Amino acid sequence: MDQISKLFGKKSPAGEPGEDAPGSSKQELNAQNLESAEPFGLKFTLNTGEARLFSSLPITIGRSPENNLVIDNDTVSMAHALVYFDEAVQDVCIVDQDSLNGLFIDGLPTRKNILHDGVQITLGEATLNFRDTGYIHV
Image (cartoon, rainbow, N blue to C red; front, side, top):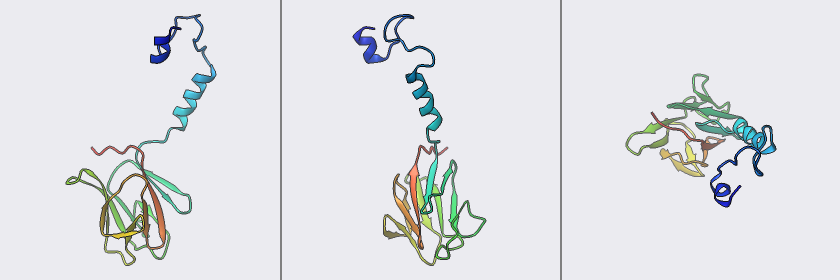
């Protein structure tokens, strides 16, 4: 395989050195990566380790079983927060639903905030880690 083919990933003709045989370790590794790839969406991980992935908005968060994301903690209000796509800022946001114990993003109190990948959301004494794994608003 010539140097340009190596740089740009061009396969060698059959039988030339550098060609991956079917079932080779490189192909198996690619298959494993596809199988373990994280699905797209909005991922919330509770401090218990439980993770929930959502592919559509809005998402209601609270203690009541009617919520999309139920948090069983007495410091979390029945309808604590709402996650939605804000057309004005063109981003995923969270808003406090007049909860008793408030909403905090990365430890700072807020009423409404954009949810950036990797932020920590605190509702009462419950903590959620937020990951945007490729949500696309349609």
